[in-house]
Amino acid sequence: MVEEEVFRAHGFDVTSEQARKLNEHYHDPKNRWALKDYNARGIGRNPSNYGQVDLYLLVDDEDKIKDIGYEFNGCPTIAFTASIYTEELKGLPMEEAFAITQSSLEEMAAQNNCEECTQMVLLAFLGAYENYQNRKNDKKEEFALKTMQPNPAFSQQTCG
Image (cartoon, rainbow, N blue to C red):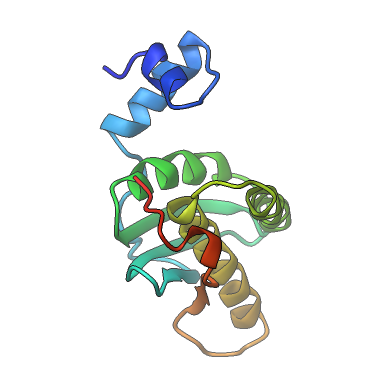
């Protein structure tokens, strides 16, 4: 088990309960599969390291996220991050999930650290959101792709 002290050593200020939940997602990621039945799909891609997250949403008639799943290619941090993120989005209205995602991206942009893995997950949601809106407006597309913009300040850093 990853202990509270380990998270603190990596700069996370967590309680014992939070450490337990983080540990659970680390060892047993949730929603780590492609949904067979979905009505929105987004891809978040990092062209600098070929990382990618495919996010699948099943949104109900009231525009609430009924189910969510993901697949990824990249560092193992993606599974842990996507597990927490996807669990938080289940049951939320699409507009609320969109606002949370936008806020998270803005918060990340204000920080001076490497969050590429997390950013790919968030961009995949923005792609799924766009895909869902397009499908509602009868635009036939399989998915929407969102690509990370290169950040020269962090080009020498790696995540994970």
